[in-house]
Length: 385
Image (cartoon, rainbow, N blue to C red):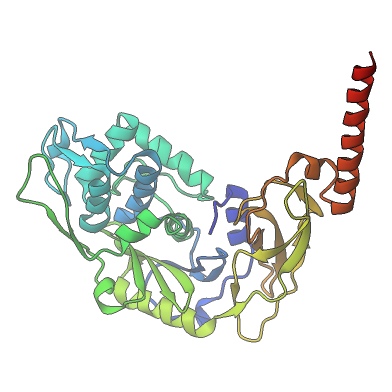
């Protein structure tokens, strides 16, 4: 999946009917979302835009910013007041140094509040400035009902988001290989500069032990927020994202969402998505574009009518995987689906003479003959002077 624009993300996910409780899974969560990770379509939801306390699921956005703003081998130094941060922690000491990669593991597995504050200070200089950065990034991801005041999710009346917005954050996060690798870890050991007694981290995500298709993502709990979980699971190439907020049992609720999603929807080939495009100035004159997404999640027996939004030509050079247009289809729920049209191979610039005449071999030969003749005439003229 490539980079996703805010407009595309929000428009895509906001459109389309959301299945009601009457035909969906039976869960206890006050708010919940089941989302197709590839298209961003909400397959089922309950109170998806109702603001709620997210607890430590907040840390998904903190992790996104850490990955985007830091090298994983970059040293992060804990501030002087780090020991005042409450609840879950890795017991950082003032001025202790831990790499960004290990801070990421501490945030995702231990749910370390102190690690989040150390990261916030490192990136923005303070928790308050980092919260502004979080809110700006959330809007860029299409999360329009999110307002965070801290990087860890400790309770604050003004720190709220929605099930839909958390699914959007997870959707983006799961496109990043570093995030995916850490999110699925069950246990790991980190390197530290001071506290050598607290180096082993064990994930709080119990589903990683019981379901091999589960890939993360983040648990959360405070008294006001209740049990919260944002999850991802992939079966047969079909990835679903789940969010449950204020749940009585997040494991039961998440399993119910996954069972419903994988039984109700199916993955079908994105058929007929191929289109030739003219390449100007390239080593080849035409290229058959292919679909970036080879299959699409649909309801059983549902067919999609794809419309090409692809220009007639582009200029070389073209890079393998480059997006050169897209196909669109409107499904039965009114949801607009998009599949990128990509180049299957590289197309370098043609040599100068070839580019000059459009790559036609006959014209190239004539041009060479004429050029040679003109050069011979110039030499003869000089010799007669």
